[in-house]
Image (cartoon, helix red, strand yellow):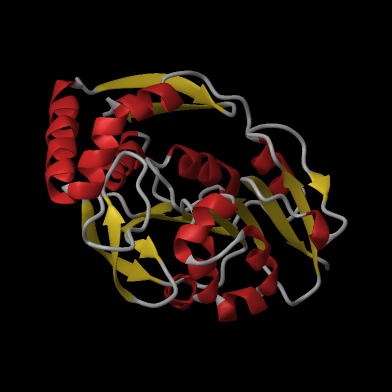
Length: 272
């Protein structure tokens, strides 16, 4: 079966994508959305569950995120401006919003139209007035980018990729110009991290605290980059902390030679 699928994908890519589209549409129609109430990091939220991926991620209680603890000790406080880039359905954005309080603001950016709409609904369900939601791709330059409109999509490199659709592209510097320089940036954009950092030259000078999910050489190579390229952008003095597991404490990254080749989580904290 897998050999047949590979042959179809190579020889008849349009037919392969049409079949995938039919399967995707059928699976989406079969899912019955519902709303749950859970505790996420000590905060009770209503969350709309509109797909199977969200059910696995959000239909359960969450412990407080280790990254919130890390950033809480390094700049996250009441009144902060947070950029949540790659916000999915805004569950984490709502956790940020609780941390920064009514005097702070969270700018939530999500490129998947489905996830953006569900995320906006979650914000409304919970009455947040300090979250601004944007449907866009975070990129090197403004304009448009192709993005695969799947449940956890990524930037597409050609129109032939599955569910690749043009989406408005924005830059981190553009966001900072519109909303002000952020205190915290949370970046999780499925391997397109380097392109986003190329569009953040002015913001990087402001020495905010960054949290970046670096998706590994195998994924970043799709866009012509690798994990180690991350450090070309942090020219001012920063202290770096990382972890390679989904959960757990952060440890000091003592040398850039120790950068993992696989996925890891990086916190870049400016030296004060």
